[in-house]
Length: 409
Image (cartoon, rainbow, N blue to C red; front, side, top):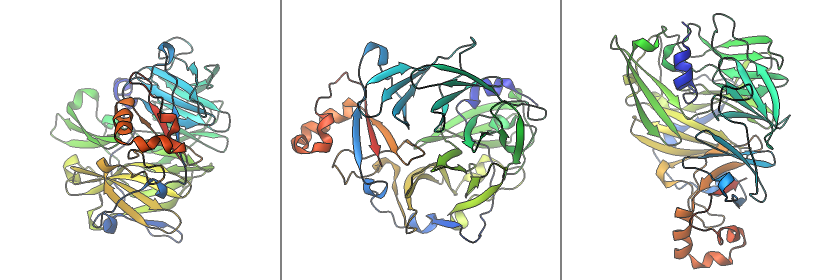
């Protein structure tokens, strides 16, 4: 059944469906050997992701204050910060404030939340507007109209995550609360709102539920993501993930990974999924079929977050629903390294605080935010930092200033 109540409350933050899929072996399929790497943890370093580190302090002012729990992304020549109901753009070189982009609202130019998809081709940001629109804005705050998302039966509701392949838009259906009556994973459609194709989920089909069927929801934080455990009135349970992005672009290719599925795919404009790589979890991987419950994740290994650069894939993996680990897969030599998530990545390039990547651009620019409350004590403890050219932008940071963007490439 169509359940807009779920879409309005949860879809904005829950970007995954539940299930599992056995890994496959095909010629050229990259193997990310988690099962062995997790048994031999080692220090992770910034140089394993990129060769350079840049620090960009964001301009501070009443009109451009960046709030707590902000997210940062590199989008072309701009840095886009989102938090609460605000979306702000800054110059990626200088940190100068550029504009406030759009607004949450029900008026003709409003959007439903600040989650957005960036299109490298037209330089526009696409925001969801329930029930069936994507609002388009540029980084200067200019409005560029909307795209209608096709929602014919039985699709009914719009997808919750978007990206692009060739001239088409691609949407991902997050089966939040098991509200979907279809088992499609992807929707391909044109910029004029014409349905091009749908792609079935690789995960088991689950019986549909309604909002009234949900007895309780609990959230467990795992690194950059979170697990949403749902219990229903009939005693059954299921799991979803929030804070993830199942669709991303890397050097012109569209990647796709469903939660609890070990395989990464490349998506074509024809709606074909070509296996690209898989996480080898050994006998601890999630192998779920038919109706399954969140308790089936106990004792399992599964990834909850992925960022793909040109030469490395950063990921976070959960072990037995208790411990989160960071991992780096070297795409050149196939090496997999893992370490506790809390340790971050040692900055062996500039010697600064550990790096905790939270986003990655199509061009392979990993980014995160670091706040004055962490920067200033570190500078006091490391007076030699004033002599390092790369750290110079940090020296004028004040207690009330906006955060600094760390970019690794």
